[in-house]
Image 1 (tube, helix red, strand yellow):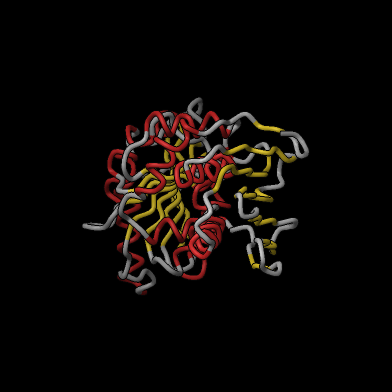
Image 2 (tube, rainbow, N blue to C red):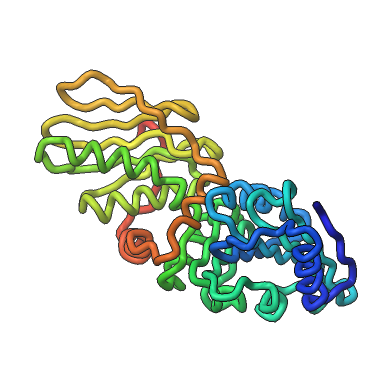
Length: 313
């Protein structure tokens, strides 16, 4: 069910939600959090789709603040989506015009679930300081996505400079399976130290940089980033050791090959993660991601971001 409320107020929206509940019980009450999505009008549907899918694992209220243009006359248009149009959540889409185009706690205060954690997500247009924004100040977790920024490397540096416990970035979440596989390999390997690391990945991928920063911090060894063409994601990690190199190589999008001394090559499922999977993982934990905090504040400054092309050293 989709209900449109043009030129409305948050008080009217709240009353409409109550009326829908009383009329047909169409909105379930078992919500575990409020997800506030801050985006621009025209970019909201991809985020809503991902949030709807993630809500099947984490039932929540989704409030979408869509900047519809600061130059237009001030007004607020709303849309309420429930039932099959909202997954296991309820979606409240707010399109703000004029003075209401900017994100504001006052726009969402009356719509927040009582006594429930708040997660803020900026799928596009990450703020200069997430925890100091109007929405960021009331959120328990703050999620950005540096991969969607014009300069992903600069976006990571902004996160580093302004990081507060509770901040995270989906470029980090996309690395979860890579980190699991590499950690497992190192746990099972002999005690030969890693003397050098090469991370090969797309030149426009902040995940490549964060993986290099994590390995820099974890292994205390020099890490080189080998730049692939834009849009190719992470392809390879090579760990150089005196007893023989370990390599995890993903030539395509789903399957990687693990090679290490004295063992046959292994094929491992390592698919690219969807936006829904990454968001669901972040909603799974409401405590600060301490490892990300260490990687972004300590590992990133130690990482040599000078990239080389494949075949160069």
